[in-house]
Length: 559
Image 1: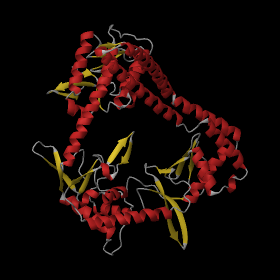
Image 2: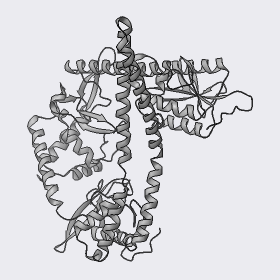
Image 3: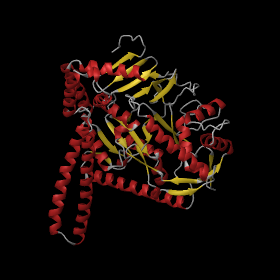
Image 4: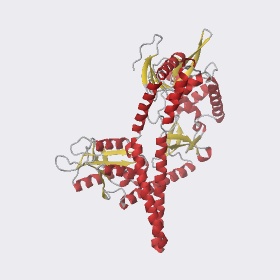
C-alpha cells in the first residue's frame, strides 16, 4: 500500500466510515445519519470518488441500506470505540479494502470515530499514513501526521467526552436502580414482562402468568419431584418441558434451538435466579475484556420486583444445587482422560457419563446437551462414545507423534514459526507504541525544562501540558504491557518445545505403560483437542491434526 493511485477518471477513491455505540448515540445525539451527511459533503467538496460495497440513502430522515442508483457507498456500524479498528466487523472490511488497494483514502466525520481510545486512534492513523493511505476528518480536514497537535487534542478530547458520557449514563442508572427501577436490562426474565412509564421507558417487571406457571413447575419438580415424588434432574426437567411442547426462553433475543426444545443449562439459570423470589440485582456482573465476572453482593443494587415463588422453596432449590455440585465433583474421581478436551459435532462440550449393565460399569463421553432421557434433541444426533475407545484412539495419535523425536522436533519448530507469524501484527503494534513512548518522554523532558523558567498563566498552561503528557505516557506504558502479555501467552515457546521433546524421549520406553497422570500431562503439553462427529473423531494439537474412525473395526486414518 505504499503507492496511492487514482482511478480511471482521475479522482482519488475514498471510503466513508461512520461508527456509533448505542449508549453514546443516545446521550450525545451524534448518530450515523449526521456522520454520513458530513462525510458525503466533505468528499464531494474535495472532489473524491466515494467507493464501497454497501450503499445507503436517507429515507424520511433515516439512513437505510439501498441499491438505488442515487445511494452512496459507506461503511457504518454500531460498535464500541474502545476496540481496535480491525477488531470490528465493518472495520475488518475497511482494512481489507485498503490492503487490496481498492481505495486511496478514508474519510470519517470526526477523529474519535476511528477510536475513542487516543492510543488506538494514533496506531490506526500511523498505520494508514505509513502505507500511503490518506486520512481525512470532515471536521478538521486532512491528517498528515499522527503527532499533529490538532489530532492529539481531538483524540484526547474524544476519550474524555466518552468517559463523561459513560459516567453520566452510569450515574443515571445507579440513581434509577436505587429508586426501585429496573435499568440496563434488555430482556425480562422468563416469567416476567416489562412495565413502562408514561414515556415508554422500562420501569420494572410484571408477572406474565403463562410463563410464570412454567417457572413454578420447574422449581416444584426440582425440589419436590414428579408425580412419584422423585426430584427430577435438570436434564429430566428439560426433557419433560420439551415433550410437553412448551416454548423455551430466548437467549440474547434469539432461539439457539427449536422453539420447544429446552436445555439443561437454561433450567439451571432459572433455578439460580433470585429474581423469582422478588429481588432483581442491578450491576450483578461486570464485563471486562470479553469475560464476565460476578460482582460482590456489596457492589450490587437490589431492586424489589413481584415474586413468583416463596423464599423457602428457592432456598431449598439452592441447597440441592450445592449438594449436586459436590456430588458431581466426587463422581469425577473416575479418570475421564479427555475431560474438558472433547466436543461434539453440534458444538456442545462432551462430558463424562457412566452406566451399568449386567452388574458391570461402563464409562462414556456424551454430548452435554443430551442424555438418554432426552432423545428428541433433533439438532444433535451424536451417540455416546465409550471412554476406553476414544481415549485409546487419542493416545495412539500421541504415540505416533512421539515415535520419532527428530520428526517431533521438526513439526514443533514448524508450528512455532506459524504461531510467531500470527503474532506479527502485535509485534508491529508494539514498535509503534515504543515510538510513541519515546516521543512522550522527549515532550515531558522539554516541558520540565520550560517549567523551571515559567510562572503565572504560562506556568499553569505548562503544568496542564505536563499532566496531559504524563497521562499519555502512562497510557502508552500500560498498552505496551498489555501487548507484551499477549505476546508472552505463546504456547510454543522454546522452553515448551524442549519440555515436550525431553518428555517424549523419556516416555518412549514406557509410553505403553503410561499411567493416567502421565497421559494427562502429555495431553496438556500438546494442548490436545478432540471433536467427535458421528463415527469419526478429529484429534488436533499444537503441531498436528488427524481424523480417525471410532468404530471397533477401525478404518485407516485420513490425515
